[in-house]
Image 1 (cartoon, one colour):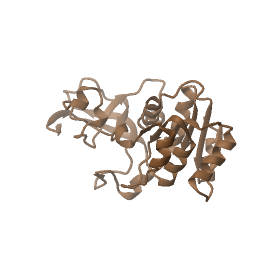
Image 2 (tube, rainbow, N blue to C red; image 1 turned 60 degrees about the vertical axis):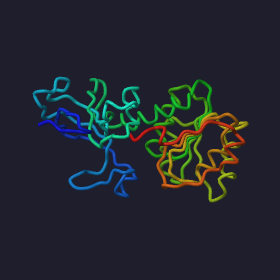
Image 3 (cartoon, one colour; image 1 turned 90 degrees about the vertical axis):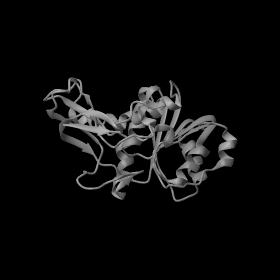
Length: 262
């Protein structure tokens, strides 16, 4: 059987899904334009084992362990031809399989897709040795951003959240500081965080891995002049952005649109 995606033929395989991750925004039944309908199963970060493949499939064989990227692009538009297929306007919510090397478990394979988001955030922000990094949100994406920042050489990695259990877990991972957001203004929280971390002048990089609007104000306030602000989390369709604060720091800001759909 050959499926058609965006008018192009895609050779089909069947994977027995062993692990997948279920993110909070699926509770709303959709991510952007993608709406959950039967027989779809919640979650889109997954890994499994190939159990059936068409004879025309050459790169995947029965028994191969694969990580799954939840998107198939048109492969012909300007974005795709430039290697930026994640920005394809005709992206379809389907599966692209990548064979896992022997030293990567299937459990770890299910984390490849969210890990790629964290790696892209770090590269977009040009995190390097000695940088100070502030991550808002100690969920899966936020913690992966912390881990990648550490691998990239960041010297200070601070993560915030409102849930104690998440912060307790974060203390055992890649962070140097954790902070529980207080019921006060975003500016006051930012000042408390900077004081706790002994970061003078603001963080080099701020990654907002939440969809909470107040975190944007907090993050911009905590950003040093010329720093980089990454909006990685999905939130409301319309948000309030602190333009005056942003003009003051005169940094660079990147949004989820720049990151793409996947």
